[in-house]
Image (cartoon, rainbow, N blue to C red; front, side, top):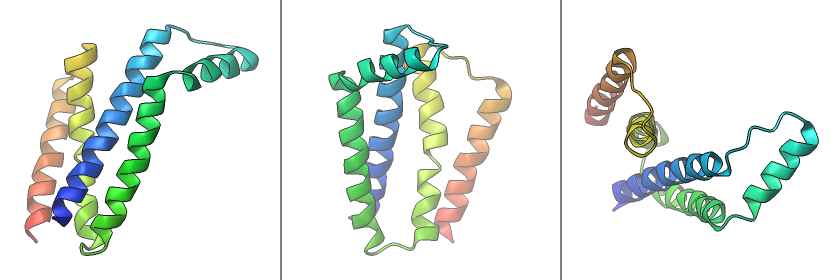
Length: 120
């Protein structure tokens, strides 16, 4: 069950990052002036999708606390490195962002590290 909490934390984290990117892209703004940046952020804070991302980050924290009741931090933390796998893949899938060969190799090394670290 405690592994499930780690993976729920992971899923929540990935969801939040992808939703924020989606909504920032939708806002289609790149404010330069400080006042415009505040206005841009204020507009995002009125967005229900952004609120869903913030809620899910809070839920991720709760799942993490539950996971920490039984798992070693050094062990559980390995699995959170999978955010470096799922977020680029989600970015490619949902936003059409390119993943270079070097980045794919890096993702492969992360997966290998999680597999090896999870066995020890």
